[in-house]
Image 1 (cartoon, rainbow, N blue to C red):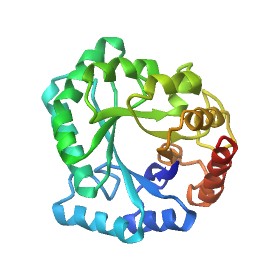
Image 2 (image 1 turned 45 degrees about the vertical axis):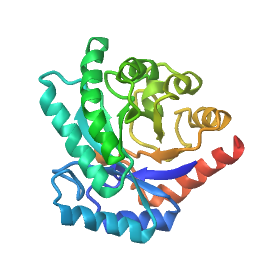
Image 3 (image 1 turned 30 degrees about the horizontal axis):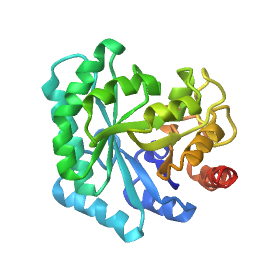
Length: 263
């Protein structure tokens, strides 16, 4: 498996410094948080700026794993604005050479399954054309694998899949051994993180909390899954948390120990 980290842990950091952290600490890729108001990479960039970002990462040998967008595919309202935003984010990912775009469900429950599936299906052909997969994260209204499978099954398109956030499936009452089979047909990559409890969500260094990372890596290894593990350290939402750069070496080492243990 390959290792990445999310720029949610280093909000607003210029891409040159993000790339430097990845190289210095042995991460193969980066998940780029695409927030126009706060981040240097977002869908409002012009073509020259996009080419520059791609060049910086390419020259360093660091991959752009994903454009982490905030589109909510099950949100109330008309379909067109949601589909248009999906296409914008996919266009950005395609220009950057990123294989994935992350989106959220953002609905209110099972009653929104058909809405989300319809919008994702509408954007899927364009995503396929650009060589990008739209991944819906296990999050908010659809935080378990079982919840998300209800949406992804009806879409039935390879360009739409799942991002497994282990924290949210666990908080939704699923253990990794149950989450993986439901997500396996759709799985793009896996987000890992650690916290003190299901209620205390301030991010912790990997291995210092209670999220079942060992169970996640064990099931992925047992099933022969060989994709990306991305550490999403939510410093942006918890400014009191320790800085991510000082934790990267230990985090990588913890993941490598787990991978070695279950190899």
